[in-house]
Length: 291
Length: 291
Image (cartoon, rainbow over all chains, first blue to last red; front, top):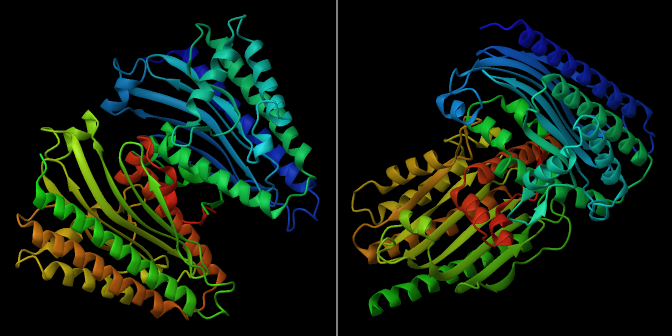
């Protein structure tokens, strides 16, 4: 059953997700430190890392920051293994043969205080049953109406970074167009007929046939996020905001809550099957309005 | 098809729900007016009533108050008719024979500003297919830990009023015990293993066999709410609160949001089938925290 090449891939993937967690938390800690005191009162804060273990096998490291720039941010790594329930096994490639699984990934969600600084989400993962694949993506959620357009500069920069990650590995197959569309389809609030944000890329089960290419692609999605999002934050860091913009942000965050609790497969599945509430709900915005 | 007795029942039910809307909004308007200015700055506000119509048939009157005591409150009446979708018809008594329906009801949700004043919900309705039944209930959601116990005084008073409404009509059949249990079962957050509030009564499809008794019972549930809840609010009206209690309230309101978006059948069904967002989401608390 043990395949030394696959075992090495699992270790390499975990090591990468841990490295990405370290680099991302370091970048966000740096922005906390360099922010101007007049706009962001209080002391700069840093990520707190907490290891956790899971009775069924494995565990992870939660990283949480509650700061003056980043009102609430989570950067989590998990490395878990176990056995899928029969219901779950039916929906997972290769799990019909043997329901045991291994999964490792990093997930990131950042809610800045400044309404002019967009919220962002990134998640990449490596999942093994009797088959193995990568999944993930990154997307941007600007909160103010004039930033919620496809041609707004933060969104243009974010998409350009994600496109470069796709183009570097897709051998001309147009992964960016496909995964951008999947992102738009997924992060959609049908009851409001509006998108959660301005998109990015989303790929649920990526298997090109070459696992080395797929891992390199997933690494580059992480690097693209690391390159694009802190730069977007720094570009907005010195912009003051109005009370009206803060209220607009809190209302738009309510739509984010509606998406996560009504439609997000990970959140709904996790909560309804006894997942770790603290980790799952760390994605919820800290301060929300439905006026 | 037209049964003059049934048509008269529909009209009487609608008239009652409209009367209850008028009496409840008047009571809450009165509390807005009599509140002490030092605790509740700003002008007292009043309910704004807005009529709406529904393309498929019928309409209603939304009542919304955004006040100094009642931070956000909705008291809505609807009187609608139409044809159930095949999926819906399968789940509704009498709709397999003929999918046409008539429904009228009143729904109430109140989010006070003062964290020491509990949130409350009440909804009663009359639904007709080829059969006819009443549904509804009322429940209390205190936000502070010491009020979220069965023996806390507001909860005792609220339950006593609901029990009187049941006992007056149940002919010794123990409706209160049954409907209290249904309420506890329904308003439960499995992912947190905690109740939404401290309960009340909940009855989904009430048909005792005597429609006059059932209507009188539903009227008394409304009267019980009208008697109990404003008295609870007045009893807390002069109590000052701390910032810590306000934060606790906003966090507990987050659990209310989680319940409504993850589990509440009416909310989830309404949002996923193209209902009136404004009316459905008027139940969302105005100011919420997931710190």
